[in-house]
Each structure stands twice: as structure tokens, then as C-alpha cells.
Image (cartoon, rainbow, N blue to C red; front, side):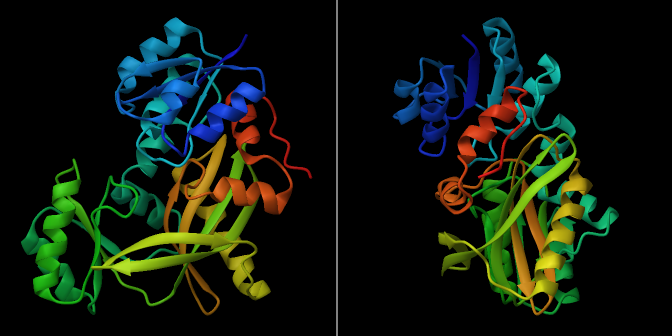
Length: 308
């Protein structure tokens, strides 16, 4: 029986575990110890930090796994890339995993490959942040570079708010720097898709319903399709393909946050995994194929099938 390692055992990984079991696979869930539903659901569980790529790689090698995947989280992406590279398994390249889990590296890659993205600067002190704040026309967005779920990401309209935003980002990040990004007044949408064997298989823009509290914006829901002009749709696809190429993404699901204004599209950030908050379920309903199944098939080295 083939073994599938799933990184994470929370609510966003439970559907992967269930689908893998339906497909007749032996499932292993790796996660912190805790009340995570996937630990009891999987055939086997490893209580291990999903960022500990060295330990996970050793465990995966000894277990003789056939594939590894995750969903809905950026936390385990470097471990996923390391396991794939070391064990020669299909999945996101480690070099890409490092870029997409550091917003500063991601921004550098975007700029190098002419991806449309809001201008930003990496800063290592409050004084540097204040200098960029004055250089831009406020407001600005201050971002922890290695967080997910909008943690450590705050809008700052004044120098006083900038100080609080900078401190909030530094409390969250494990790096010694944060980003100060130019604020663009625009609609934020999501784009999900899949890239396999160097080919972008599909890209689906979708409307995003959000709420903002104390300067932080969080997703509440999504809807397909995203209705826009042909010119804007073409630009979204162009910038997404440039971003995917810029970070070296391959053999993985794609999840991105995008700003749209008029016919312009700006890539905020891109992740090498499926989105959270029921995006895979919505894609499955809208497109007529099981998105989780295709993620698993890719992880096993099979060709994903996105036909209805």
C-alpha cells in the first residue's frame, strides 16, 4: 500500500486525509501534538513540528513514503520542498518554497521578473520604516514577511500607527526585517490554480469577501466566477503566470492574493498550496473535479486530471 504523508492535521488538512483514505492510500499525518482532528483520522500520526524539515525528511525516508502534500497552510511548505528534493518526490521545489514563505524574497523575485506588484521596501528598524513612510504617500501596509493568515499585517495611516504596526510585525516574525509596502486603493480578489510539469493547468480568479478590524483584513468567504472585463481577466492571467515563473513554482496548487483597479492587476503574494476557507471545495463544485484528489495525484507522481 502506498503511503502519503500529509503535513498538518488541522481542519484544512482533514479533507486531504479523508480523500487519500478513499483512494486506498495509507495516510500519515504530521503535526504538533494537540487536539487536531487529523491525528486521529489518519492511519498513522507523527507528533512533530511541521517546520522541522530535517526530522521530517528522516522520518519520511525511513517510512518509505510515496508522496507528501499539504493544504491551506504556508507553515509546512519549506519542509514539503525539502522532503521532495531529498527523496526525489514530485512537489514544489525547495528553492521556490523558500521564496514563497518570505515576502521580501518574493517581492525581489517579482521585481526581477517584471511582475506587477505594489512597491515595497525591506526595513530592519523603526527609523527605516519611518523614512519609507515619509517617502510614500500614506497610508502604508506593514508586513511580517514570514507569517500567514494576515498575522502581523497592518495598515498605518499615521506615524503613530506606523510604530504600532512595526512592533506588531516584529512580534510575529522570526526574521530581523519586515516590509513596508505602498498602499493601493483597489479591490482584493483571490486567484487559485495549479501548475504541473512546468505548465499552468488552470487559473481561477474569485471574488473575496473580507472584513477589516483594527487595520487587519481577513477573508470571510469567496465566490466563483469573478466577473470582469476581458482586458482585466487577461491581465490577471498574465501577471499570475509571470509570478509563478518568477518564484520557480511547479507541481503544486497555487493560491494568490491580487489587487485589481480598473484594468490593472497587482500580485500581492503567491503561495505554493491550495487556499484555505473552503476554496478547494468551491473549486471542486464550480469546476466539476475533486481538487483534493488532484493534489494527491500530483504528490504521487500521477498526472492530475482537471477535465470535468
